[in-house]
Length: 239
Image 1 (cartoon, helix red, strand yellow):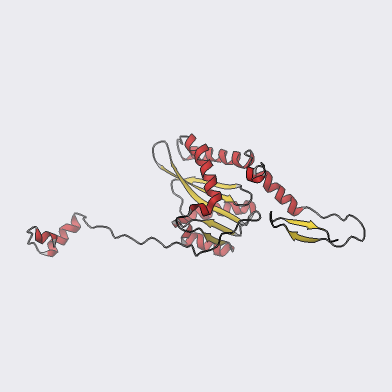
Image 2 (cartoon, rainbow, N blue to C red):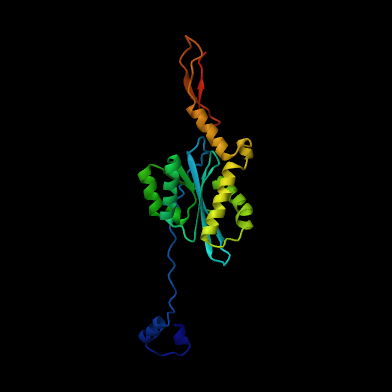
């Protein structure tokens, strides 16, 4: 109609042919995949491997090429379980990282993440179903519901990403791996009573696996109680 108003009298078929030859078509917008948040109430982790938080953070190489980092955190011990760096990290790469971490420390009970396409796609969904891991998504537009990861990303940005010019992908992986080691093994955390995440995790394992030695004949059988503050199994005697 606009061409007719401007005085063009060509057949509409000819106009359409020229239109396509000049590639003037406007691409149709594809509706973004809907978010997976279902109103789940967020629960604070009470033991190691109960909840892992996943998220992406972006940076670039010295020449401006895009760089992405996938981070995996244990919400209870505050350990950074992985920092995966690459130019692109699709759902299959997320699975590879989760498989690698799970071989070292077992599977989590649930994964907490946002509604990014890598997380809500079929690859992660099928992996979680096969492994019996629950997927929990934060509410769209509320990143602080994944607060532990947001806190780590703030430190990671200020102390590592902003302090280095990455020459290439190998350089980025080397530097971020060194930062991860420092974060887990050297940096004390106030929330962990000034222990490092590795020290805190080791004490948790010791308390859970501690043997129960009898203290005298005729002592009543000890039972187990779940400590509501730490989520660790602690022995208590019956009086």
